[in-house]
Length: 65
Image 1 (cartoon, rainbow, N blue to C red):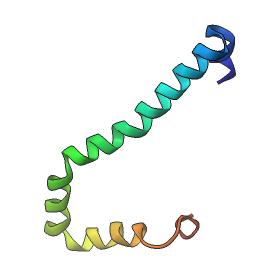
Image 2 (spheres, helix red, strand yellow; image 1 turned 90 degrees about the vertical axis):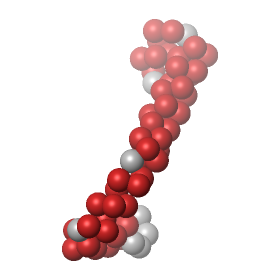
Image 3 (tube, rainbow, N blue to C red; image 1 turned 180 degrees about the horizontal axis):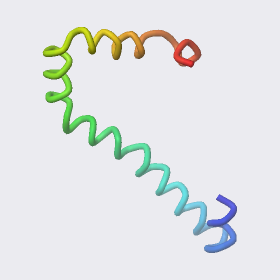
């Protein structure tokens, strides 16, 4: 962030970083929503592999590491 601040001034660098963070967080969500039905079909077709994925999604964030 300090490189963006030095290059584009603090205010413009801050706006660039916030736009990048917003796009970076939203893009995987929208891509996942496009392929939701395909992923659900894959999980139903391969229940053994799906159980590993579902097990990884259970619990708290601390339990996953």
